Image (cartoon, rainbow, N blue to C red; front, side, top):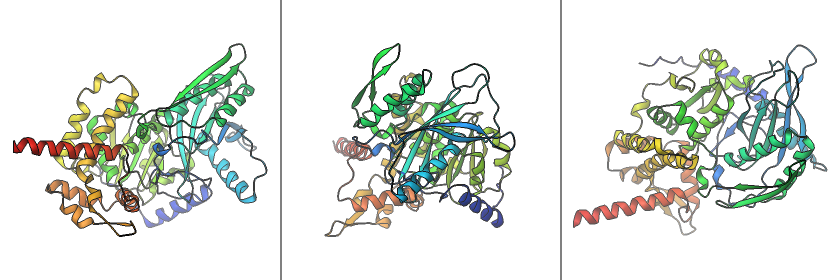
Length: 476
């Protein structure tokens, strides 16, 4: 039997929320359905537009920043500070300037979330990770980070290259960071023309490629091709790290906890592992999106987030394990990615999903998983069974939206639930329709006259066709 979790004391909650309000400008404790971003910083609340919904044609990025560690005037601690910014914004209106200042003041904290106690190093493994800042209007900005040790003799401090963009496409930006890092080894002056060319290029549509011409001293002119995956609903995620850290049964239990919008904390040593695993866990919810606090790597100064009474999905470095364990929490799934174990759980994670559908997910995940070669194959293999789960449980939603003459729809929740014939499925669906995951999805569906022509709708139509063919065979 998993350990009972302590009930949160009212005083602790108030203290936590006050801390969160004070740490960052206009920081919210969380909502999102794959939210896009303005500049009022807040850990991501995912919202209406998923990272994959960008059709193309936008700018690749808003800023390239270098964040370095500078020694504080008092004491031996270091403070992360922006030491390079491209482009520099000039002639901004007062409101725009305030907005930019708020954004830029929060970024260093997320580039160095592991605190201020650093010492010069001679070796440091590079890390690639990301964070999301969400504005009060639900829009978001994603920070793509590469932390590394600058070239040079003797001990030195790591620095972070951070690209700020409204676009979710982690594989593509990882390649861009590779190019930035290659130029960084030569000179900062070589980075500028490359990023200027990138800024002038339009973000490609799914399946399309943009080619940049870039000159590097002693190497000549290079042509860099950046291709966007054709299936864009998975371009912002890589499931391979999650598969490496956890068993399939554990991944299904995490999915079940997320579906009921519970509190989930991931623990790992490295920022890259935390970032990739939490993005992967959130991506399992497609076509629904996590609607609460979402922080891939929680900065040390915001560890009190784990005391919040509202749902959250956060990543915490293993070095802060004791602080997390000592925090007053209730109904938390605490996932140790280093050991592949659950340190805390509610206890019913295996019973949340309908047993037959849970077995279907497990069987599908296990079939041929060792034969997969590319990240695209792995992503499709892992995502597919979870998408199919939602097709089988709530894929009939469009038939239960009644429309007025104006086109505005009204979801018939009771009839929708009654239409599910299996008792175990219906029991799950009745709980799921009460979540923000489902509510936000249905709100969008009510506004649209036709179901969105995306990957989920394609799978629904395929499933309906399979059922028709099965009925025809049975009649024969």
